[in-house]
Image (cartoon, rainbow, N blue to C red):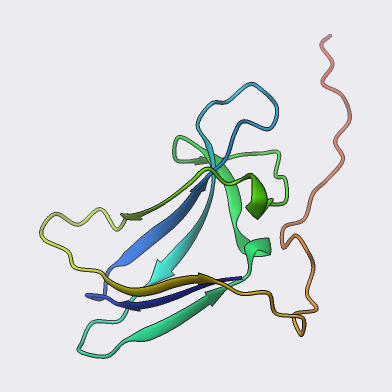
Length: 121
């Protein structure tokens, strides 16, 4: 899990983990998850399992998803993504990693389908 203690402005942000390319085709692969914030004076804590991060490339969700491997992460970034012009404010009180042994969900939250090979007529 990643644990974030934030105080936001009601806008939503994207947490991105940048990783080296997994299949040597895309140099800009990253794993992302949306962080929703509440406006107001109160701090909130977001606890996000790594299994919920999805793979994307240049803003497009990849068809082929791989489980995120936190140890392969090279960078982390946070971006405002609500497409609203104007100022924004996101205060970050803490970013930490948490190993929760009580977490019994899947190691990967997204379904994968086996597709037949592409054929032409």
